[in-house]
Length: 473
Image 1 (cartoon, rainbow, N blue to C red):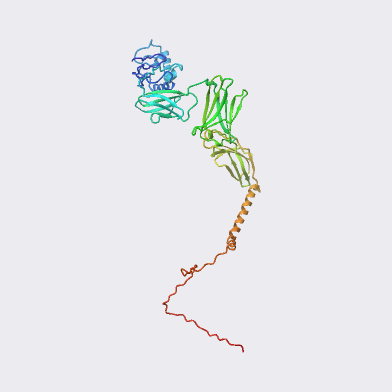
Image 2: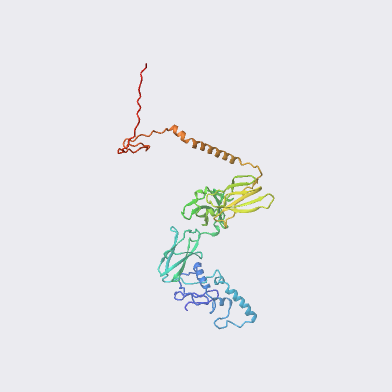
């Protein structure tokens, strides 16, 4: 096979013509043409390496045999027959070799795939990044049916319409983007975007951001270990859904005058969606790479201790209510620590913002909160101030509750009085209008009428009395 080699530290490769497939150790070939697996292509090298690792290494002499001096599996001897002890030792070596991936056996600074990239007709051409549209795109020339996109060797998404992959979170740091044909003519190619500029060790380090004290967002970072003396950093936020940006409003500098912290006030105007925190650097000596991280604001919030808003108790019942303030979360989980008398304290988790206890006696309680949505990894907030209850017989209700009950009783009494007096008062203020006879219909409005039958024979006799008026005598 033209151009094939099997040398220690190298995998067999194809010829520059691209007519021969790329073989894997001990399995013949993968059937991959010599496309754009360039010498500086870590993405595609890794993809091919993973494919090769999936084959068994039995049946032919391979790179493993060259590396460890294994006997020829085709029947020939690679050298003199070793003694029994040496054979056992070699068996253990072979076992260890088979348990190690091929990529782990090759030196990291040596190119295991020195393949010519002069493919006359690749199926994909002009791989490029479109930062304005946030997509990785290319020109399709071959018959392929499925393409997968990778970011730094990790599968990211399947191509849309076989011509592009959307990259909503486009990093400011140099990143390797590669594509691989998964159905159709095997092919892989890659680009780096953006190009690496400046010393990476001059960029801001240990960038960390968190929300605290309800209204504040703070980000801090360290000066790059190899940053120039005149380096200066600036930070801004970017909403990854709307792409709206907010520059830092308040910096804190170190002794050299270099910004190392930023604080945002009134985060209620910000969205809790996915947010990018980006630190750029400037210097008159050299270009400074950026540093970035991204997260949701509600996931990085550190909750304050709950504020106790009301409490009271008597011998048979006790009650305590609290409140947790947040612009980003409204679903909380609470942990109570309760100690009754001289007993050992115990903890209890609840989702309601109040505590009720029957026959409470004397006890002390504390409460703390955390976000219920991300409770599987977010830590608890700080404990509230301990609240001490002495619930003895004859304990009075709190003043505020007594005042509230008096006010409610007064309003209820006034309402009842108005209810009973409503009709009489309304009649005096607005007397009723008398009903009028309907001359058109000949009926009274109240409907009290009788039907007269003119054909009735019987007549009622009315007695008549004669009255005689006598004059005065």
